[in-house]
Amino acid sequence: MGTADNLTSPQESRGIIPRSMATLFSCINSAQYKNRKFTMKVSFVEIYNEDLIDLLAEGDDECKPQVLIREDSKGNIIWSGLQEIKVGSVEEVMSQLSRGSASRQVSATDMNAKSSRSHAIFSVTLSQQKFIPSGGGSRMGKRTDDGDWVSVSSKFHFVDLAGSERLKRTSAIGDRAKEGISINSGLLALGNVISALGDPTKAKSATHIPYRDSKLTRLLQDSLGGNAQTLMIACVSPAEYNVSETVNTLKYANRARNIKNVATVTQEEAGWHDLEHLQHLVIKLRNEIKNLRLASGLIPGSGRSTPSDAINFNYQQLADLQRSYSELTQNYAKISAELSSYQDNSDSLKSNSRHLNAIMEVNDDSEFLSHATASFQETVAPVIAEYEKSINELESQLKIARASLNTTEKLMQDQELKLEEAEDLNSKNKSLIIDLKNKILKLNEREETTESY
Image (tube, rainbow, N blue to C red; front, top):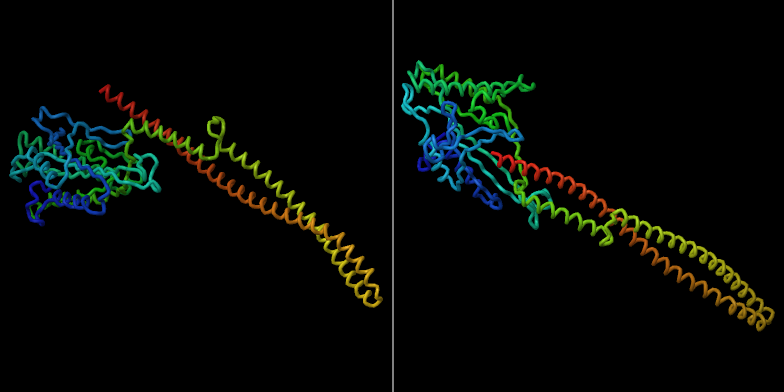
């Protein structure tokens, strides 16, 4: 695990944990993630003779709270009773790691003067809250003016497995022998789980994975076969007299390579565990639905009005305007035809007048013909002027009718779009309210369960 290597050591001699934490904090403090909120906690548990011991808890082993393994409704493994300490830098992480390592079970054997007599898991939990603009975010998170906050939780389990031991080689007796048997038992159970997960023939069928055979495998259930990536580092000896142990260790690690997990980032809207926030959110969503109904053109204060009523009312207005436009168009066509007829007659009369004028010039009877032509023009001129006035009025009415019709059609399109949006949002909000009620019910049940404990 790199517990003996501190930050003052040269870069090339630092352990796995110091390097990992330095890289992690470097990413957190970079400009790329400056708009995110991070919280980091660490825990340290030891598995000694199949007993779980919190290495960061204060006091003697007898006074420390019992560490239990539980499973939530989603099948995730929860370590109950384990103390988590908040840290804010690499130095604080290494300080907690050193403090916990000092409490580990270490004894001398013929193979190792400081042999670990237990398995240990150093866990780092990183919680981040990131802001998603309202245009691409969920409507369920803690809302601000411009978007939502969602939380993403990640875990890093650094597992230090005690080495496999042969009692003949270690010359262990008494308690040391019991510890060696417990160590080998945990490693055997872990090997069985790795074999079941890494066997491609078993992966295609619903094969039982023996997680419950050991507390070690039970603790690492999510890390081995869940939404995680698993990496094993094997420590071997180059000496010839350790060749048997070296080969077995390499075979063990090779089986772990066959585990194929696909890790995905899971994020959750902030505030799901806050009952008061959920209640306020339900009230806000109801107000949004009410505002949308009012914005859809409904009559304020009318409890029975619906978006469909407003649309039907607008359809009636559109039908009336279309009827009026049709009548005006028919009248316009009729008067235009009459005017065209009068204009044809007028043209004919003018042609006759020109013909008569020509005759006058021949017959010198111009006075009579000129008087007849003037008299006819005086009779026809008022009629033509009246028709032209009627046509001008009809053209004005048609222009107004066309403008009203275009405006009404545009309003109808806007209303239909608003109705579709309102119905879609109403459906989403109904589904959301149902989800919120289920969440509130589960929170109440959880509170009742906690009180019963």
